[in-house]
Length: 100
Image 1 (cartoon, rainbow, N blue to C red):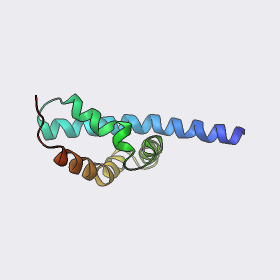
Image 2: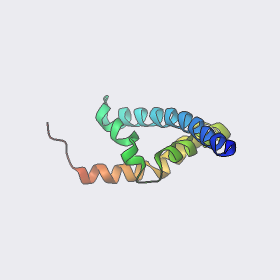
Image 3: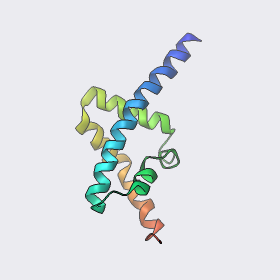
Image 4: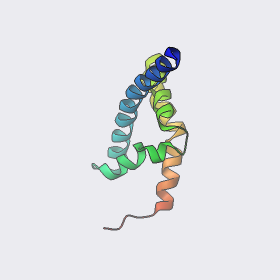
């Protein structure tokens, strides 16, 4: 049972780091793409509902964290760019223009 708890704790720690890396990537991406702060878009890109489209959200964030710790920020950003960004862009396109 201790092994399962240890594995879960390791997953949570990796996800904690991965979440921070994802946040940094997305905030930079939103600023570059929108030219302004768009907290709603950032939230849509980083929320568990979106990450669930790729896999278990904690596992997705943990994978990002592991890549960051093993290979660095650019490798983690490349993974996000290749695996999450295209899906997010497709979803945003289907979503259409925002109505205020």
